[in-house]
Length: 72
Image (tube, rainbow, N blue to C red; front, side):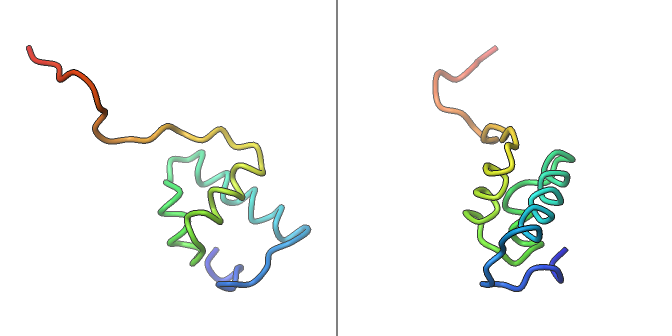
């Protein structure tokens, strides 16, 4: 996938649609936006925007949450 997109190049038309479909498929398989950005050599924001444009339902953030701690 990294070979299909030159870093910093504008991605439009059918190439953008193809990239969006590929990113969406990998995201739906469990890869993170950061991992996809690293694989493609693009920014987090670019990948996030492509996924959003393609109608992908983005997952919530992981990690620790704020609020009351749960003690047994």
